[in-house]
Structure formats: structure tokens, C-alpha cells
Image (cartoon, rainbow, N blue to C red):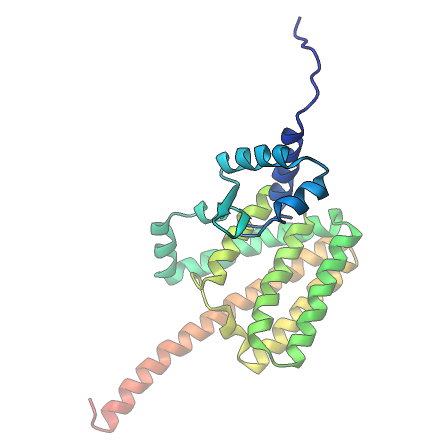
Length: 256
């Protein structure tokens, strides 16, 4: 018969499962430092030996890493999503920028739709809190902070969709964006008209999400990313035109 005696789960195994789920659900993030051994054992209600066994197992899985004298950290598991060669290829071809935006438009539109249907009240409060910070950053003309909050806003919506595969895939994509692999998002916030438009687009997204309107949320996200695509295309075109204009000016002034 396919039955076995029920065995009580070791405490270290229960700790492993809990930390695995926290990483899987994106609550514990790559490079995040865990509490000290003493504090963590108290929070989990287990002995230090049981905790050490769990940490050792998670290290073997590649989910945790220790730094001498600094503590235990969540491993940079997202760094392996794209090979270095592919990341370099992305960064040297403009075609990748627009494919990236098209991919985001499709995936984030779906994530927004899911968030409006499946997100908890707390999920929506997180998005609202981030949007409120965006408004404050806009008023203080902090373009760097606006750029940071922009990414945080979009990731909060993805998190509210409660699809762990999508969450980790998109977090990996946003890490490349943050590193400037696809484009420098800060440029988008330097022009006053662009900053106003982007804030208003995020307001429309947030209002549709808070109203739990799946179709409206998806449409607002898609419209926003289409705007970003056009703005970047215009920027690239303007840079190309400026290069040509400078060549003409140099020729006219006899410097060529």
C-alpha cells in the first residue's frame, strides 16, 4: 500500500520552507540582509542550532549567502536571468529598447488587470502610498527620486498581481533597466512637459486600480508605456538630428 508513517517535520525544515516562501513571493529581496542569528531564532521560535541547519541548507540551494563579519543575505538569484553576453547585446542595440517596452506593455498590462481583480486591499494601499510619494517628489522637482519611485510603482502593481513567476521575471528586467541597460529613465524626468505627462499617466493608472477596474487599469498602463516608447523614439531622433546639425554648423563656420 502507498502509505507511510507520518513523521513530524524537523524545525530546521519548517524554517527552510518559510524562508523559501518569503523569497519566492518576493517579500525577501535579493541582497537583503536577514536579522542577526539571535533575533531571527527568536522571531521564528526555534533554537540557534536548528536555524543554523536551515541556513546551511538554504546556502546549499543558492538562496542565501554569508558575508564574513556582515551577516546572512538573500543571494543575488536574479543576476542569472540573463547571460552577460546577452546583457551586453541588449545595451548596444536600440532595437532591444523598443522590444523591451513592447514586452513591458504586454506583461504589465496583464499584471495590472490581475492586480485590479486579485490584489488585496493592502496591495492597493501600497500602490497608493508610492503614488503619493511620486506626487511629493514631483513637487520638489527631484527627478532622481521620481525615476526611482516610477520603477517602484510599476513593481508594486506586478506584486499585487500575485504571480510569482511574473514577479521574479519582471524584477530581473527592472534590475537591467535600473542599471541603464535599456535606457536611462532619469532622462524622461528632466523635461517639464514629460514629467507632467508621466505623473498624470500614473495618476490614471492608480485611479483605475483603486477603482478595481481591470480593463481600465490595463488600458492606462498600455497607454503610458506607448507614450514612453514615443518619447524615447523622439529623443533618439532629436539626438541624431543634433549631430547632423552640428556637422552642418561646423561646415558653415569653416571648421570642417
